Picture 1: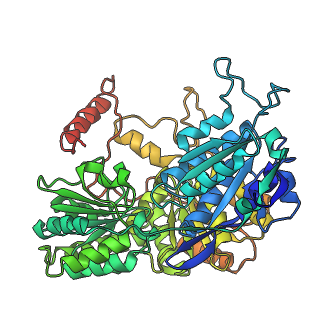
Picture 2: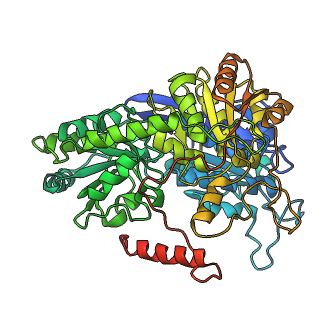
Length: 625
């Protein structure tokens, strides 16, 4: 028997976390940097006592909303290419449930975050305790069970000794490139303070080796055969390209074979916008260049992508009847999608091997790639100069696309990290944002969770404190969750929050109206005499709101005012909120894309009936699986 040390469950958990490392491509990195959280009765005297003792190097970040804490942890891990993580702790009940959304974001985006929600008493003696939900048909079912549906791994530690297998399994998943995401280890509040003689071996330094999965000779042979048979192949650059550090390998692959590529939200920015084979975003929020060429393609090489409905236009985009799918992914679940030929292997190693195996191949795209890029560049240049109609009171307004253009082309440093995650802003940015430094485009769109933006910007800033971090966010998402702005003030982490205020949830209003439904419930308007929300627009001063949190508040209605505000923000020594008034309906267009939604098939509104018929006609063009 080896040596042991008597610790509480909470103390042992932190010591274990503090000694976890990863090794990737020969480089050893400390894996767990700290803990985000909010203390409540279920955690403060257990895990909280261990944090307060200062016996580990883990830094505690006091969040202001548990969902925000989770989003900040996602932003931190994502910006670190999943090689560093944060844990997130909470009390039982509402505190735990607030984290469920963030756990879903982590899982949907394959980003590792360790969630440590507190739970009700394992001994059950004082039940029902404060914030406990009792389920008469299943007493083991607590609020923490809600994490099961959104976690890659879930466990509940009901005895102190169970912590060992729970955490070892947790880090098995957290460090797995294919299966990583939210990991939840529920800690009952009494167990957190209970003691056990933990083996020193369990608490010792542990290095998790993140291995690249090597493609087999057979896999490369099958992939090369598909490529040689194709005349017009097209690559989808997914987030797996970023996490595999496969950008240079993809550049060489596309250049060698004269193959264009479109970017997903996760893959965008891995290769710079001026690469001659980069067609920008692809799919429902994609560019004209990507979408036109995708319809002609006879082979889609899907590298590191989930092939979500926005990327594939709900399986409508690849309209060439001869088109095949080659899925290159470490996750077999994703590699098999759309009846693809699965190559379950590392993106970088696979692209390198495939480039060598098909050395004599050339596509038949000819000048179509350059022509599509030139046409799209001209369109983006136009959008970047686009004027907007004034407000009803005659005051000037900016177009949303113009704001992005000013920020991207003139105002922000090229190495600034830009963060967003919901509404129409990600759609526009996937299409028109021109990334000039790899890894500076940070987007959450797998779960499209409103409220991710400000918290994730804080996480990205903690990850890279020497870089400017700018979150571009709609007024709807800002209102949904911006409380971690106070945490940024508290931590002296300067983030710049650019709020594009169009007075409503106009992304959804556009969708609603496109399906024949009258504007209803999405514009921020007062209730009128008819009883509907159709009165005057509600006016909000987001700069003043930012000032109330301790940030610097600035305003802009013209390009000149925006330039002045950004200049002042870059020179500031604290977080900044720039309130930019933009004209509604000045987002970018659809650019020959389509998206399937559940449209009403019966209605008294003839426009809705027409929309349903149109939807049914487009569904006939989709691939069925």
